[in-house]
Length: 256
Image 1 (cartoon, helix red, strand yellow):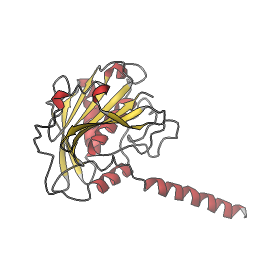
Image 2: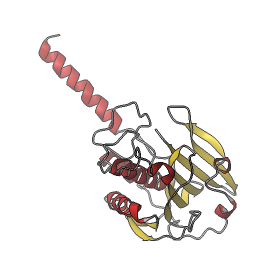
Image 3: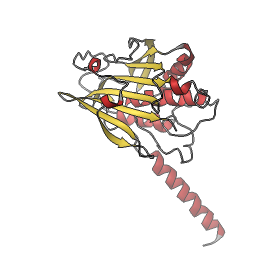
Image 4: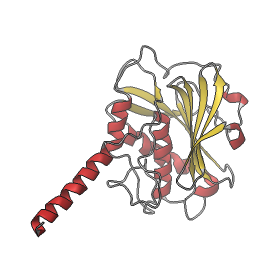
């Protein structure tokens, strides 16, 4: 093989690898919000302190670039324990303790349909020099809300090179002052997840049997059984059966 052929072959391999990666599915199972039309609007309940407000606003603007969904930041109803509210996503921050996690995304599902969701941000770590940066705060805020839509990660290995262009659905160490956004693959995946319409909606639903009030959502022993692990062997997804086809699913973003 001559030098020119070798170069062409190498470029072809790189392009093929990129194409295979971009076509990869990173939906979170088959979970999605039921709705009768696209685009639809999800409410993000603002229960965060002032130093988190800009990150919530940025995440809302970013995810609203999707062709299938919009988000609206509204007054939160979660109170101090970040209780879920039917038909919306409640976003909260607090010093949740030295328990190893930066963020939690929790969804309540009935079958495959998300009925309510929460994002939690652990200030025990975000108040430290390592994580108190625009890079880490924007990454985790954006990622946990992405999970609340039904997205999973594009990559879960911190040892891999960051995905280019960067995406908040990747595990990587962001530059301190970087504001991390979704990338086009995330928007494409949302379009795939929400390509069909449903005969009903869970966006404006009321589900008094969700039973979130009976669960200490900050206690890992209440999250149910572990159903997946990260590349370090840490349990990072949990499932709790609530009966009658309803479940609580918890996705954990552990510290690096």
